[in-house]
Amino acid sequence: MTAPAEAMGGEVFDVVVLGSGCAGMVSALSAADHGASVALLEKADVLGGTTALSSGVAWLPANRYQAEHGVEDSPDEGREYLAALSHGLIRPGMADAFVDTVKEMLDWVEERTPLRMRLVPGYPDYHPEHPGGKPGGGRSTEPELFSFHELGEWADRFLGFRRSMYVGETPVGGGTGFLDPGEEARRAEEALEGLGRGLLGALLKGLLDHDVVVRAGCGAVRLLTEGGRVTGVELADGRQVRARRGVVLATGGFERDPDLVRAFLRGPVQSPPGAPSNTGDGLRMAMRVGAQLAVMGEAWWAPVMTLPGVEGEQYANHGVQLLQRERTLPRTIMVNSGGRRFTNEAANYNALGAAFHVFHPTRFEYENQPAWVVFDQGYVEMYGGYGVPAGAEMPGWMTRADTVAELAGAIGVPAYELTATVQRWNELCAHGRDDDHGRGNSAYDGWCGDRRHYPGTAATLGPLDRGPFYAAPVHASSLGTKGGPLTTPDCEVLDVDGDRIPGLYAVGNAMAAPTGMVYGGAGGTLGPAMVFGYRCGRAVASA
Image (cartoon, rainbow, N blue to C red):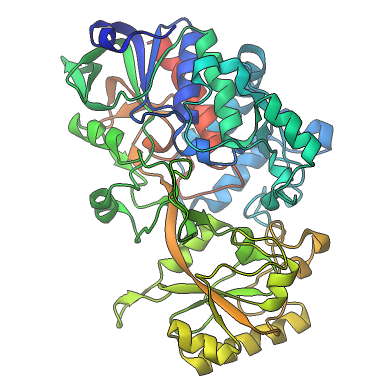
């Protein structure tokens, strides 16, 4: 059921959910399935938020799909792994709620929604050598392909563009990124989608099947309260929507608001690749009613590149590309303004954020910003990347030089340092071990590299010894922020005294991240979003 826009202001629902990413949709579905009347309101003119631009992978310890792949796991191992990485920032009750609800949530998804998940075989945890980690994978799941023909008028109301692949068919998952022409034609004809949009399409069909009212272009600006209880929202156009049982903040993070980024994040963020609508609306609304905040300095950190000339509405991130496979493959390194390597280039993107935030106390500057990715002609011929296939000409915006010293001059770093860095790297590669930064030591490091040599250091180690040489700038960025209102395990927002704010809930990147600073593995954002979205909907429906 879709209510007319002009009628929305006069309506009353049991539950109002703000935001249409994974967490918002699961919350709305769960609430509706537990008997509540629900309205889902999206600020943007299209649905999906950052989830629509993502791989749609959800990290879920002890999930139901592991047995068929021979993976042994348990909730206790999941707890052990999170605790090993927590540094005290994960509240025990939240970790327990997460791992103990995975099975229940997946059973509910399979039984009560059109969404079908499956394992991404072999995808290792991001820190698999820590206690409870899984070097051989088993915790990262993804959606089955879903036909957008089932969505009717809503089929073209999603952020991003059609991507009809599984993760394993993309370069990040070991595939080529291209389908057999016949298979591509079949999937196009059937309007099949995978990854983030496939996940959301299946969830939206569930919402429509449960008579959830779905509206795009309905941004909320203020929470309505009566006697200390949240009773609804005021929209940007002045209309009001009432909620008998509660309002769910699922508005995403605040990485697109420069003032909030400057006020809260531990390091700078440039060119965020997520949804443009992530401007901290839910955070501001929660603060106005006295919410206690937590995990505010953290984000889902990521290195990115900007691709000149990539424009158009289908590119919601305006040509911003997550730097993932290109920095992991052999024959490429990253250097700072001193011309020196400064990190394990093949580490997971969230962990890499710490390297960009190193601050020099006497020079009073970030040591590793700016930074560049550097590679050679051998890389170009073997792998390609940056929008071109192997062996093709690199884009014209790349800096190119015949020698390493000339490349250093072109990007403004000391020639003797960059030359020495490349020489040292080549020596390390010859010995098959990165003694400087440990690249290749983890089972995760080579996963996005040359899969012909995985597992093993050769999947990510390789010399830079064939000119010409290339360089491009790398920026410290974020896929989304982690900070927000502190909640109970059922997503009830707490005030500054630790008491519940009646009628207010938060999920996804709009809540204080239940996993603290930890990014457990591929899908470490969407896994908790699904679990706590399910818990939230169940709780608010019974409020």
